[in-house]
Each structure stands twice: as structure tokens, then as C-alpha cells.
Image (tube, rainbow, N blue to C red):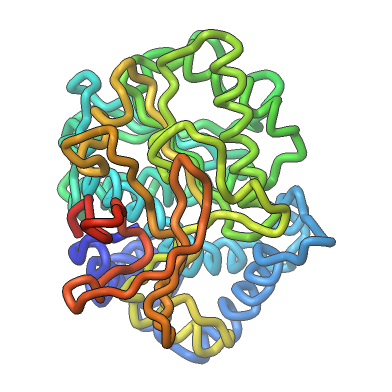
Length: 407
């Protein structure tokens, strides 16, 4: 995934000013300077950041399925939520904005009606909705400038913060024509993501929501298809972002496989999974039990964020995550993301899914395509030395490696 420079640089000093102003307005901090005060951070923020970071980056043998007991049992839940908002919200927002930037880079354009009707499930501090709006502001796909957002979450205090933050951040981005509604609700996957009466949506975002579920991937896939079919219009977009951990990433890949299998069984041709796989082929990463698929993006962290990183012994200069983007459309994948494919559609494309390592033999990297995942060894000319993770290429014996999508 290659993120636009505008998005990469949008979260430095100015974003810190927005966060400080908002948290003070909401009474979450006493003065603007608190956000960079080592005394305040060390007492009220860093311990919670370290705990949550350990929880979210859990080991394979201690899968914590539900975070709500910690929200309730913490001795200072207000500071816990503030720590989550200051540290995890901005990075999750950037991940969603990065996905939006990738859609833009690959030529995806909004084809739905000219009014947005978006929904974020498991919204918390609204990082998904705000990530979409930031992505559209700095690397757009011609999404309508008017409409509504609905935020759903089970934690009422965090949802209240998220609704207020979305209003504030939307205004900062110049998106004043998109009101926000919040709904305090516990989602039961088996009952469906949304009631049958909730119709007319055209954008759905879920970030770090499914990894808390114990439901099987088959049941989640059934619920997603039902939701897409009953509650969403044609040309709707569905974005899922999940942790880059092996177990959670493989679960998302298994969900992709379950969706494709169910769609094929039911004769559904409107489901298009366009990213990150560029097609409906079998997943190359699932072929090996030790493999998984994730992205990694770099960003310019706000100064206060760097300070928290240093104090907590963390390093979030780069952000890893797994993701899927689906579209409800009768158009082909080649039509939906035209920049990912050369003029001749019979030429197979491959995506670089690893860093590029220079060795004595040349350049080594992994690619994934409809033929699976494989390692390539390439002896490049100097013009090809810029290859990096996320590039989409074609290979041939005569012409060597050629980039397809723009940077």
C-alpha cells in the first residue's frame, strides 16, 4: 500500500493542535499544555497506553475476546478512555485514511448516489468515520460532500466522545454538511449487523471490531452478505480493518474465503472483494499455516504521540494492519480499480507483499497474485530500484518487471 504524501503529513503539528483543543473543550484535559506535559502523561496516560498496547498485541495463547470488563473495572475509566483516544484513535484513523488513499491510487471512484449514508460499527471514538473523511479530504474518490454518518458502539461513554470528535474533526476538514448520529447498541452477529428496517446505506466501516468476536468466520460471512443484501444499495463500499497479528489476520483471510464461497454457492455476482487481493483467487497466504497477510504504512506522528511512544517504550512510526475492501457492484474488478490493471487484461498482475531485500544475487521480495504467493529474485536495472511493498507489477521474460499502478 502506497499512501499519498498529503495523508502521511496530515497528522503532525496541526493535528496535535486539533486534539488538544478538542480534549480541552470536552473537559478531558484541564489546559492545552497537558497534552505534552510529561507529568500529566506519566500519571494519567502512559500506564493505560502500555496496558492497552499489551492487551491489543496479545500472545496467541491469551486471546482476549472482550475488552468491556477492563473499561468497567479500571480505577479511572475516564483516563483510560482518554488514553485510548489520544493514542489509539489517531493511528486507527490513519489506517482507514490509508485504505482510502489506496482506493484513490488504484482509480476507484464513487459510483453510488450523490448522498452519503455511511455507518461505522464498533465506532468507539469514530476513528473509522474520521479516517474516511480524512482520506477523502486529502486523497479523494469523489465521495458526495453531503449526507449522514451513523456511529454504533456498545460503550456509551466512548461513543459520546466519538460523536463529539467526529463533529469537531468533520468541521476541521470542511465537511459541515454531514451530520452524525450515534446509537448505543450491542451487536449480535447471528442476529445481523443491522435491523431489516435500516436501509439505504452506501458505506460501512468496521475497524478492530471482528477480532473481539468469538463467532465463526462462516457465520460472520453469512451476516455480512445478509447485511449487504438487505441494508445497502448497489455501489456501496464496505471496509474492514483488523490487527496484523497472525491469528487475527488469518481469521480475516478465512472470512474472505467464506464470503467468496457463500457468494458462489448462492449465485451472487454483486460481491466484489477488490483489496488487497485484486481479485477473487484463492488466498496465497492461507496456503501455509505459518503465513498471514498484512499491510504496513508510515506516518508523521504528532509530537505528543512521539512523546508517549518514548515514555511508554513503544514505536509507532509505522502502523501494521490487515484489511479487506468490498463493493456491492455488478462492475468487474478491472472496472472498479482500473489503475491496478494494464491495458491488456490477460496480462497477470502481482502485488509486492513484503519489503524488498537487496542481496548479492539481486533483489528478493514476495508477490501475491491469482497464481498464489511466491518469492521473486530480480536483477534490476537502476530504474527499477524504487520497488517497494505495495507496488503492483507485471513480469515477463522479455520485458522484466514493469510497474502498473501509479505511486
